Length: 480
Image (cartoon, rainbow, N blue to C red):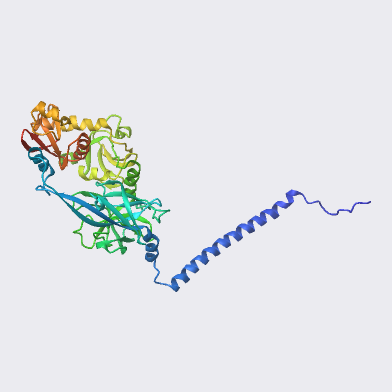
């Protein structure tokens, strides 16, 4: 049988390529047209939605998004009264040593604040001063559900605290956004429970950033967001949102004399503290390994700067040494924020934790430079150095045995066992056998309290000690 004849040129696979490419181009064009049409459709529907309900502004949508995660925080505080209530706690301890237990009465007080759920597992972000000294913490959601909260950790230096509640199933939460790109004048929204009025919404704008304020508790706070959105007692701990409903700050009413202005902790700063509190239950402070001093007018002229702090010592093997910082460098900025003196330098560092990468603006021999330092946790050897060389004492916890040995009239506090010759303590006349009871405003009844008080004191120009010798207690001011 004769095969059916095939006429014309046989089509090769290569001849099909232009057809395939053409189809691909058409498909890509159709996809682009489709996406463009979809975008137009979404914009059209949004416009129709707004036209249908022009009252549904971006603020309304932001509040609707965030509100389920905002909570009311109620605390119960048990206080015990004594004849020395409100006075320096040292005097109460001093009189207890001689007269025994003093009559006390328990008194319960309640306070209100706000918070925001930042994870589905019931993790809540709020202010430290909202839950300070609380014996019981109760959290109430917008739907009326109530939970007993557990304190995960708190940091008074930055006014940040983390709570956790146990709930059946996941809770609505608001993820932490960023405060790095805040714009002066952009709209912000505060949600909280001012004066116990739950889920109150106020709006305003970002008035300023990097504000330093002294709170009603006499603590100094740095890098705060300033806004004209009303933030009143009860608002503390609630979220500050941008117009997209993103969490950009934590409202705080620590300066109640303010009229028409409010403050918030930037969320980037709060995040570093939250991460430490969740992991360790406490904050591992950033340590650079430098000692600094204020600039005198003569030093400022010598270094050719108007403000900053000069490095007087770099510890061997420290993060600062590894980053190349040297004695005589002048630090004028931390991550782009100016440093005026020792106080502002340490205040800037307070918002950083071990592991943070910190950019320092320095002046070295008249040249502007930038150095990135990766902070580490404060080593034990540094704390020992502060006590032995900077303050000039070595101490051990007091005990009945030591009290008998030195003829002490108390078994509380820390006993000075050695004074470094030529140190600040030696110049002040402190001797072995003296009992150290307080450093600045912190009682020191144990070595842990001593270390914490010493680290805090090292950030100041002067240190005030309460020292007991025999039956007499007196204040000693040191300039290490």
